[in-house]
Length: 114
Length: 110
Image 1: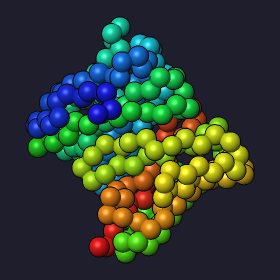
Image 2: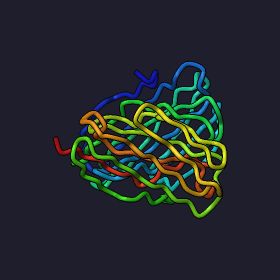
Image 3: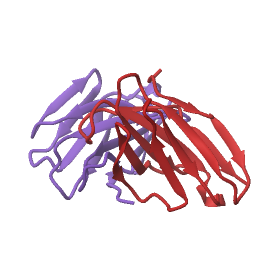
Image 4: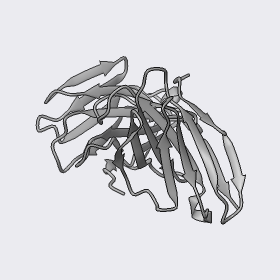
């Protein structure tokens, strides 16, 4: 158990809909990362938050947004969903703010858009 | 998005054979990390390398960081069925984001 909790584990929704994925980081970790992993693909960096502030941004679509709340949990919002958004979405947390400390991953949310 | 190539992309080995995956960066890295993702699982941190030329071992796994801190390798000696999975390198490739390599998927033939 990594200590990172993601909910829900599975999500099936229709095209055009909006969903929210939730992540609770490990106790004490200030950084939260979001990654997208399509079928048999690598991990695409979406966005990172550190202590409530956006720290780094990847090629995150404009239809996607995220935030980190004062209690450090984070939410990833995906709107106007398309079939191509179907993927595994991972959240990870770390104690540092840069890419120099190990990241702990949650179990992921498998999103299926139909 | 930015990705770092790892080679090979796939590797099938007979149980007991050795396995090596390579990770290359065009820029000097402050550190490099390695992760393993079992089929159906999530990435799990294995190790971090920081120093030029650093070599670290974990049982049958040997990790190396190049002298120029631009490349790294993971070598597994005498593979076992429990080694199955995808191995990713990760680091601040060209930016400060924790970027993952394309991964090497290892399958073991019993």
